[in-house]
Length: 248
Image (cartoon, rainbow, N blue to C red):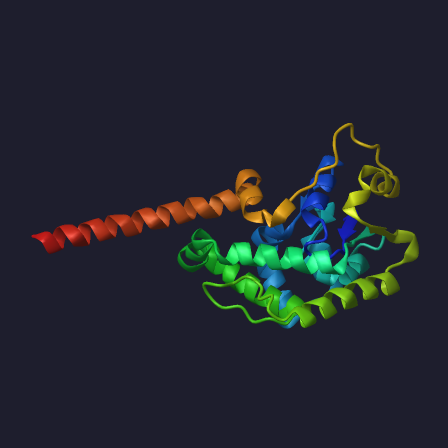
C-alpha cells in the first residue's frame, strides 16, 4: 500500500481513483473493496479485526479510495506506515448538497432496486451496505432502499467535520496532503513524487452521475447488471409459461 485516500465520499474520490490509476497505482475504490474484500469488510465492520487483517487484504494493492477504507484510514496506515495519506476536502455545504443529490438519484433508480433485491450480487451488496451505513454514517439500511438516508443533515455534517478534524490531528504531518481536486495535478504529483501527466485532470462523478459512470467504465458494475438481465429473463419466461398455462 502506497496511498491511502482518507477523504470522505463526495470530496472528489472518483477523481482520485482516476488519478491513482493514471499514476500507475493498482487502486481499490468502493466497488473493488466490496467485490474482492466484502467478506473481510463485513467481518471487520461487525466483529472487529487487527492490523494483520489489513496487511493481508491490501498486500497487493497500491491505493485505496472511498468507503469503507476512508473510515479505517488509521488502521490501514498502521499496517502500512510508509504509505502516504491524502485528505480530500471540499466546502461543507457543497459536500452535503452533492451527497444529497447522489443519494436521491440512486433512490429513484428502479433498476438498482431490482438489482439489490433479486440478484446474487445484490444480496451481497445488501450485507455490505447495511454494515457500511451503520458503521460510517450511523444509519440502518433496508431493502430495497440500501443507500444512505440524507434526511438527518445535522448528523451528517457532524460526521463529516469530525472525520476531517481527526485526520488533521492524528495523521503524521510528513505523510499527509490536504487536497482539493480543484488544485489539479501539480500538488498531488509533487506529494507522490510522480511526473505530471500530459492530459487534463480527470473530474469524475460530476453532478452526482455515479450510476452512469460506473455502468460505462466499471466491469464489476457491468457484471451486476448482466446478472440482473438474466434474472429478468428468467422471470419473463416464467411469466410467459404461466400465462400460456392459464390460457389453456
